Image 1 (cartoon, helix red, strand yellow):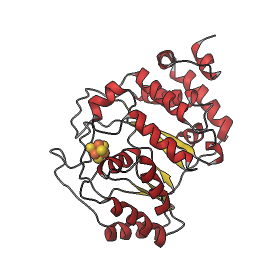
Image 2 (cartoon, rainbow, N blue to C red):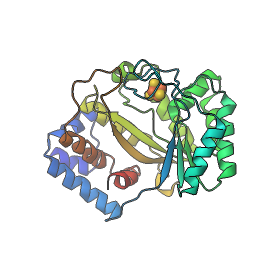
Image 3 (cartoon, helix red, strand yellow):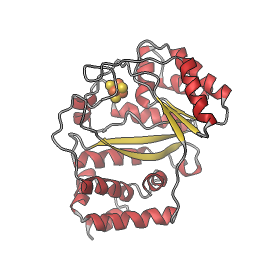
Image 4 (cartoon, rainbow, N blue to C red):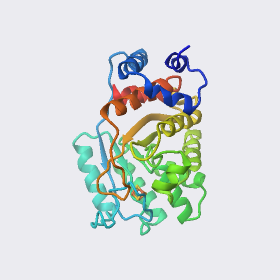
Amino acid sequence: MDLLTQALDSQDLDAESLAKLYDYDLYALGEAAHTIRTHYHQDQVFFNTNRHLNPSNICADSCKFCAFSASRKNPNPYQMEHTEILEQIESAYKAGVKEVHVVSAHNPNYTYSWYLELFRLIKTSMPDLHLKAMTAAEVHFLSTKFNRAYQEVLEDMLEAGVDSMPGGGAEIFAEGVRKRICGGKVSSTRWLEIHQYWHSLGKMSNATMLFGHIESKQDRLDHMLRLKATQNPNALEKKGGFNAFIPLLYQRDNNFLKVPRSPSAVEILKTIAIARIVLQTSPILRLIGRLWG
Ligand code: SF4
């Protein structure tokens, strides 16, 4: 049986074997991925209207791929406070936004209660606005800085009104690469543990993968398999689990990671198709279909 058929049969293949799917023609991969996608979603597409808000770019970490945090390559630090954040979110809400996505750099000036107070203010003022906030990297930062267990941070977020967690900070799980591109950030194991605990509270989250830098194709497959292994069986019922897999293409400009070239358009499309094939038996597939349909 050839590899694509084995993968479509959801046979138990490792990352090294699955990375060979890249040797297939894009059309063969695309056709297989499209068949899976239409099986789950027919010709429907899904989207929401949301507003991203990043309270600060002042960061205690220094990920090499980052073009956002204040540094030599971005000498414009900023730090928003509650009033300004509320004004911006309320303005978006009045314009019809249904979800707000609040993710910040790891600002050492904000207190623990600053975050919780912000979430309470948002939910008090706009109870039906979906509040997606706090990556696992931020949860780890607060846990470390304020000496609180992950569980305590996550339960406090829940109590303060956070509806779901975004998928940032996953980057690439392969430890060797992770150490080179973002060595100070939450480890892969801890990132997955934080999401698992959030899922156990009955809540949903997303999962990203930063690709197209110094990782190998095998590292991408390893990343997908770790997410698949972590998925909660209740995800389809929305009772906790990953809601989305979001492959993010690394952007080469304005950062400290030297990458000579980006993947070709064909390789990018193959990555998306392979993700659909590899994650097909996992409820995580639902949003792959949504995002890329
Ligand atoms: S944690 Fe890393 S990616 Fe996030 S803002 Fe700080 S330096 Fe950038």
